[in-house]
Image (cartoon, rainbow, N blue to C red; front, side, top):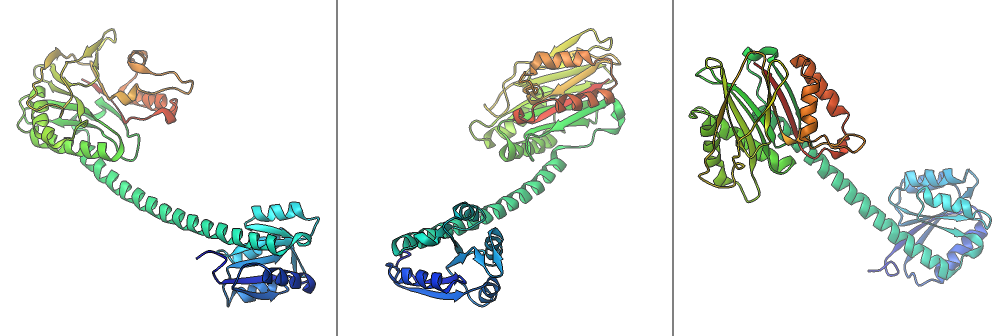
Length: 388
């Protein structure tokens, strides 16, 4: 049913009886077939009337005995929040009428220009605009509530994920490890794991799941659970990575995968055995600070193919050597001038700060990240320094 056919309950707020009569006569000449008019002369009467009745529309004179100007509109809008308002003003008050619309009125009428045709058009459009406004307002509230619930659920999920994937650093490493971890959203797909093994070795892993936010976080949880299950049976990095691949590959959908770097440090043999599943090359800095050694293997990312084999390499470790583990989010960043850090920039950062203690280097990383353009950060980031 259109506005012309529906019942319209109209409140006319006008102290000039002649102007009120003209409005009534103009309405009677329109094609609006069912209009009930209630007439009051003061703003105080409007408040009392609104306390007992509801209206589809209010025609409001901006010059009343007890109120005038924009304050009249604000007052009325406060007490009739879901009612269409048309302001009624004099010939010389056009600018005031426009400001009244900006304050919440749907339209305005200039007294000298009121006739049946104009009044009918203004009433219909004002009611329709107000109904549209109310629908949008209702949808906005629903959306805000839905987003609030989503954010609440995400926060809970993020807390659960953090408890699963972020374990404490083994106590025996003390201040020999500096860690920076920053998801791009509430939940992330990057993870790390540092664990002392029964044979005395220490396992270091960084991994980067495909995608972002929730689905990447779910992949990270799956990876972590598989890691906890497979590490007790593994005989070395390549064995561990292969076992994780064999377990997870059948569960992952197309275009879902992980890159990972896994290294086992053997303090008795003073060596580091490592393997890579499509992960960026990691770095080993010699204790004298002269050589930054790239650690890389050409294994393919996890969970793309079944029955995949991986190779591992071994490098000697001296006291004071440093291992740097990270995900690509650390160098896929742009500074505030738009310059990308890149892998060479990360290498330069490591070399420039090679004389800092682990703790001070961690602080330097935080300072470095603060200088990035955060709008350009699309990936989660992990940066770990281990001093042997």
